[in-house]
Image 1: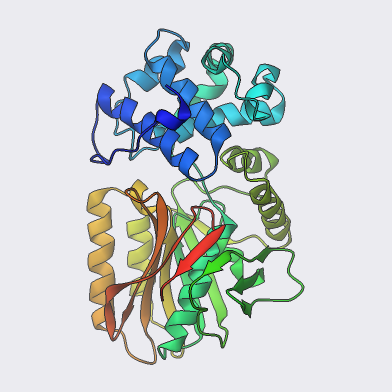
Image 2: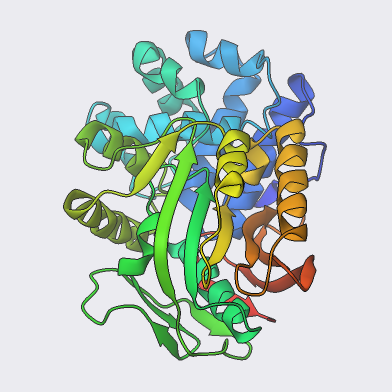
Length: 363
């Protein structure tokens, strides 16, 4: 299969079996290609070719017989992350032509050889979901807070993030944003985010983050070089700016690490909603590219908890829900917001590149 022949097909994210495995890899090829990541698309194309062979040893055997839902589990990105880590550490020099963007004709063979040589290293990469923490996505939190403040909610926000990974977005109070000409954040920040903006500018006026904590079932410690490498390996190699942002986030975490609890999203949400709200502060549940990894029962639990808490919210102590998640049909990320009292229906504010390179604002 050539990269330009891959077609994205919407299927049940919980689908299982050999056909679902094949479709997960073909969808990933198309998704990467359509979002300006030809190297990562090529890696997934090579892995897709290996599915139809007996190459790749125990690693590819486990992929072919994947017990879970390969699309919901982001199976292609799990293995692609491990292979990228082999390249980043210099443990597998033969992968260099792939990651140098040369698109070698023998990509599948190069990948098979590397997988067979490094089974012990790669197998654990299949055990958990990819960590795709990305500072570039925090534009959505910032723009949504401006939008909410323009609707009369207090400009002091307490952020509660589920699926925080390394907590990069929990540190956004230290970042500088240019959102369609509206600037917010410290001038001295080493993290500057300025997505290409389409549409009207959001309302100005600024906001402040008076508290930020999150949860993750497997949080990443950016101050640990090995864990930072894992996060770096999930960065698509085409996007060098993302590596620069990750370096800035690591520097920020080493000065003052984010507050992350190791626990599930449902328990975390229950606890934050049970706490007495602070007058004059907008409590905001936030998440980006995590909803797909949460089971259906837990998603219902969180939704019901938020709606119940929203019924008790007041103008002086409001509740908001900011979601930046992938639309699997359009390959884009959509920013949607709910708030209580007064805005309990989802409002679509914008559509964006997966890593925040550009934004189409409709808010």
